[in-house]
Length: 316
Image 1 (tube, rainbow, N blue to C red):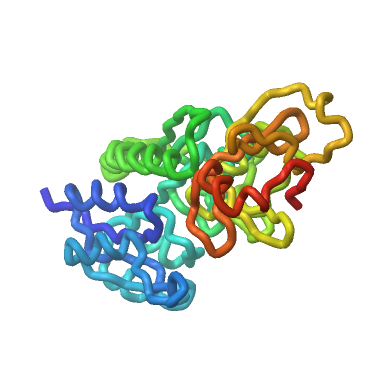
Image 2 (image 1 turned 180 degrees about the vertical axis):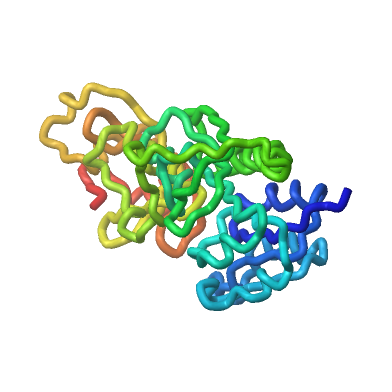
């Protein structure tokens, strides 16, 4: 039997296990990914994770700046289907509708919840107990197509967006591989999304990376881990920006700290720093002062932190 011919469209690390799984079974005639982007202080061009895989396996590449107007190489492949995963641009209808088996997306949420570009970050930040992966037919409106299959997993209290991405990427690869044969033999029944249950997880804006301690300790904790290891939340003290990589929740009666404000350092014990939140304390674990590398709070307090972090000082 002739292998089905696929175009794969993806950019981020989440898409890599899915591309790897597909290439073992199907004919990937083209990989479409975002253009190379400058990275770091030297602004050197960096390949996307998906491009690295395509180059490794010598799969033809296409990197349009604007897929809305530059898509002909995709149509020229005459694919049976297009598989999309964490690509990063809105794809025009002509591309979605041309293949006989349409365009199929692997999305890292339980649709219709958390449509958009940051579903894993938001699932953690919003304190969701569960999330998962949805495989769906694509439509021009973002993440709105009928669902082909879904699988749910629990978000552990120890998860961050990095660990959750790894779990969901492998789950998504397996779910897609189980789903595609039923798409191709037309034995699957797509299910329209319930529009009354739609929520959104739009791409993260810079202002959302600011950490505020006037929330509950669980909200602060979820914000930190939901943005780690990227883009990482930050806060400011004495005009110095500190990225906060890891924290712990410390349930404690805050009446003991009457007069203190949320965001204020209220306790330092053996180089351990505790910050007041709405209903308890946040223990800083790993911090990164502006221009420095990440370090444990104990290492920081054994150096410059001894003067920088003192009881009564407040994060803004």
